[in-house]
Image 1 (spheres, each protein chain N blue to C red):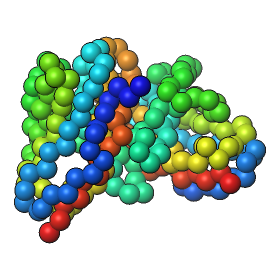
Image 2: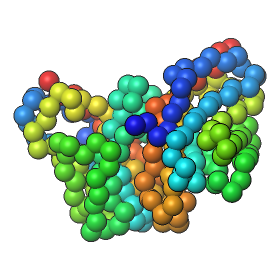
Image 3: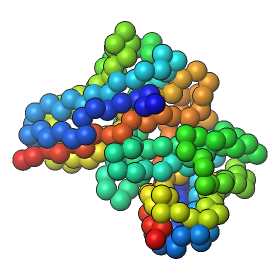
Length: 113
Length: 112
């Protein structure tokens, strides 16, 4: 039981390049989330998916797209990376009960030059 | 507009003493609150939560207090241990919303 896994762990991009961050969970959770963590800013929600087939914008969605591929997988895509997207990205999933705990992946550290 | 605020970026406490981490919120629709702990290079892990129908929840060395009238919650760690050194995030959710709103975090250092 791996919980929430993320790939890659580290990535360096040049401005304008694109990439997809992968996330998978094996806990059969309905809800999945993408956050970014920046110094002094805490964890900010980028996009979330309350259930398979649905996605919604969070607090900072600009410059990102997401795909809920199936119940297990939720990917985050940067179409044209910018230095402002340098951050640590966390994926999370949440237990189905209304007040379920969120479980986080280990994070992806992304640097955009 | 920061709906969940942790005004102390850092806190240093001696081993064995009490650590008190504070969190304020502005959204009166929030009715469920959580604390997460984060070590460097790892994802946050759930620590303890409290529903707005309670004013206290305890789990071992960790106690969360909720003051709804003041829109304030606090996390008490007694006694503090060096392994408690981490960044602590307060989070809140409200109604049927499945998403959490996080504070900016407080870095706790427990010294020997």
